Image (cartoon, rainbow, N blue to C red):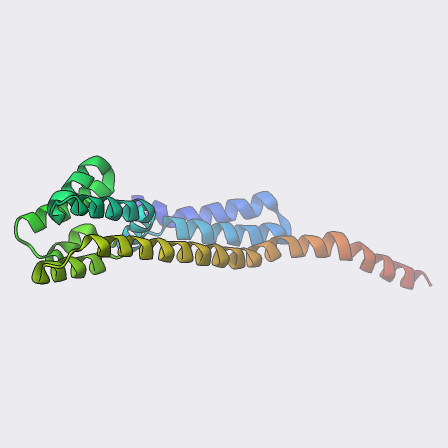
Length: 200
C-alpha cells in the first residue's frame, strides 16, 4: 500500500500544481513538479549510498589527514584509524571502526574495504595499505596525498554539478515563462494589429 501511494504522489502533486497555476504555464509547471517529485522519491540503494558517501567526503578527507598524523606519531594504521573513529562518531566513525577492526583481526585492507562503502578513494586507500604491509613502506605521506587528491576531485565534481544544475533549470524556466511572455507581451500587440487591420 505504501509503495502504491509513493507511486501516485508525483502525478497527484503535478496535477494539483497544474490546476493551481492554470493555463499553459500551469501545465508546464505541473510537468516540472511531477518530474522533480518523481526524482526525489525514487529509491535506489546504490544511489542512496553514493549520496551518503558524497556528503561524507569533506569529513573523510580530514579523517585521512588525522590518521596520517597518528601514523607519523608511530601508531600502526588500525590503531590510528580506531582513535580517529572514536573521535569522529557518526556514520563515518562507524565505517572506519569496522574497517580498522577487520584489519586488526587479520583481514587485508582490500578484504576490509567494503566496510567503507563507496567512500571516495577507499579502493586506493586499501591498495596503499596492502602495499605498505607487504613492503614496509611508510604510508602517512600517501594518506596525506590521497586526502589532497580527494579534495581536488570533490571540488571539481561540485563545480560540474552546479553547472549541470544551471543548464537543467533553463528548460523548466523557459516552459514556465515563455507562454506567459507570449500571452502578456506579444499577444496584445498581435491582437491590436489584427484589430486595426480589420477596422480598415
